[in-house]
Image 1 (cartoon, one colour):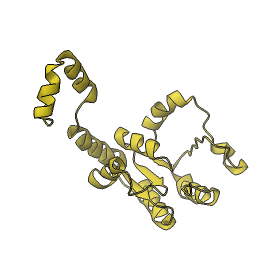
Image 2 (cartoon, rainbow, N blue to C red):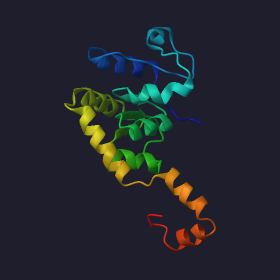
Image 3 (cartoon, rainbow, N blue to C red):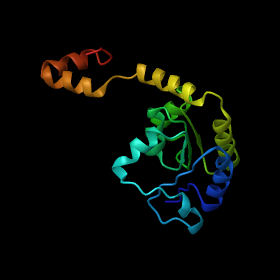
Image 4 (tube, helix red, strand yellow):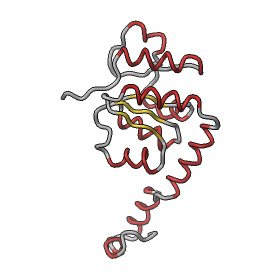
Amino acid sequence: MGIQGITAQIAESIIEILSPYGKIYITSERELESQFEPYRLNINPLDMHHVMAFADIYIGDSQTMAAEAGVLGIPFVRFNDFVGRLSYLNELELKYQLGFGHKTSDEKGMLKSIDKLVKMEERKKIFAERRKKMLSEKIDFAKFQTWFIENYPGSVKIHKENPESEF
């Protein structure tokens, strides 16, 4: 309650910045104002990650979508009142520099981040390297689960005694 994000006026400013650089697509769970309908991308929600993987930039007010973009190496700009309150996004933004978070009180800063990203030379390469660094410092959770189940119940003891181990 009381949490805000991208308004129609802000969306118009974003479109103005992005227009010279390529196609703009909007996905939305809510009804869009008529001026944004030409940008609407009607896709099956199951295809969203495939579409995002080929995007140049993600801009939105969704924590989840911003994080997913960052993990895919797609630079993101998120604009909402949760900025600074979620540790996993703070890590993506501050430690790995995979995106920018701006509170709704910082509209100018958000627009500057978008402008900076669209003008960044070798953006794809830079963000691919940042993604690679981030992934190199994380475990493969599917591999961990497989190890844990295959070695149960001994895996419980091993993990409790040394949670940082490379299973």
